Length: 227
Image 1: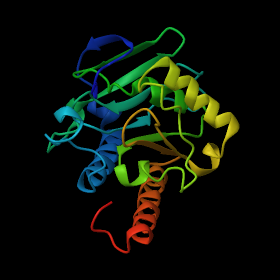
Image 2 (image 1 turned 90 degrees about the horizontal axis):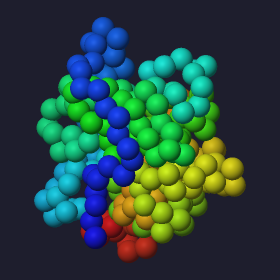
Image 3 (image 1 turned 60 degrees about the vertical axis):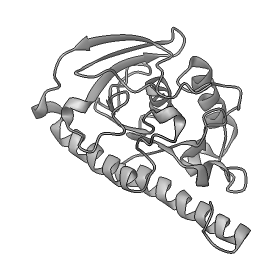
Image 4 (image 1 turned 90 degrees about the vertical axis):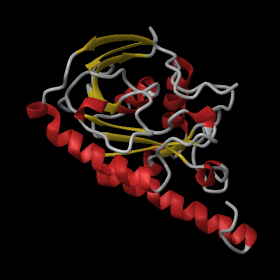
C-alpha cells in the first residue's frame, strides 16, 4: 500500500501568510537547495513513482539555538509541494513545535507542513547545532545503504510517525549517525535524510553519498546503465 504524502500526526495548523521580512532570507536559501535537489531527481513528483505523489522535502531552523527541545521552530516545505516547478515563501510553513510523545505538530503558514515534519523536528532535537534537514528520495543510495554503511531505521517503522522519531533517536545513540549526518529510512522506499549546520553541509552530505552510491553501482555492473 502506498501512503506517500499522508500526514500521520495530529496537525494543529493556523492558516496565515508567513512574513517575508522575517522568513524571506531563510526561505530563499532553502528554496535554492530544494531546486538543486529537484534538478538531481532527489525531490519531485512523477506519475510512475510512489503512486504519483510528490516526494522529498527540506527544512531549516528559524529559532535561536537555545530553544528547548520539541520547540525548535523550523521552516519546511509544505505537504505535496515537491512537484511544483516554482516554489515561493507561500509554499513553506513554520513548524513551531513537535511532540512525538503526543504525535502532535503545531504550525502556521498558507500550506500544511510536510508529512515528514515530526522526523525533521526529532532531528533538530538531537542537537542545537543542526540547522538544516534535507529529505531526499534516491533508490541509488537507498539500495546500497548497507554497503555504504549508512545507519538505517527499522523497515517495519512507518515514516512521519512517533515510532520513526524513536528510531532516529536510537540511531543517534548507537551508530555513526552523528558523524555521517545521513540515514536511510528502512520502511520508506528510497527515503534518505541528511542534515548539517548549514544548507551547504546538508546538501554536500546528500550529494557526496549520491556520488558514492553511483560509484558502487558502477563497480557492481561495469557501468551506470541501470542503477
